[in-house]
Image 1 (spheres, rainbow, N blue to C red):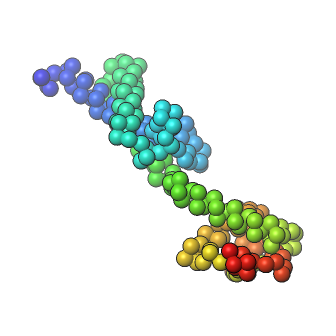
Image 2: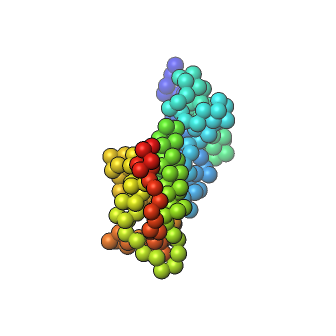
Length: 213
């Protein structure tokens, strides 16, 4: 092949631009880029969305090698198609695919860095179980009422007394703080750890520990 010819240079530019677009689209879609400019972050990669639609698997990490290759090939085809169409639209400018691809890839990288951390099914199940237990506790021990005031340590002591399995090694104070925030999002927490409009209901209710469970 004569790599010095104009046609070869065009082909190489098309392939390079297509590769840049393929990688960028793998991690970010035009929709997620728009959300980024609006101050929001899409929690799902385009590659995961395509994988889920094609196989029912939610995450690329859980897919087989064959499925991963198939998805990557799909985005490679899309990337080259965008590079070719873009170059044609701009009068055959062979540098369009590379310059635009670099720009979109940069934005995709920013979107990926700001994307919420994804968790596996086991961790998600664990978090849901923790929140369910906390909601059961809070339904009888916490009151979301105006004028209420309670410190996080009071909630922590009462919750861990009712559910002894939740030691600080299993559920630390920051995680407990997240549970409280999800249960009572309107209750403001002061820097000293006091929650406004939230109070602890005193009760003689028998705990799980007392029942020997």
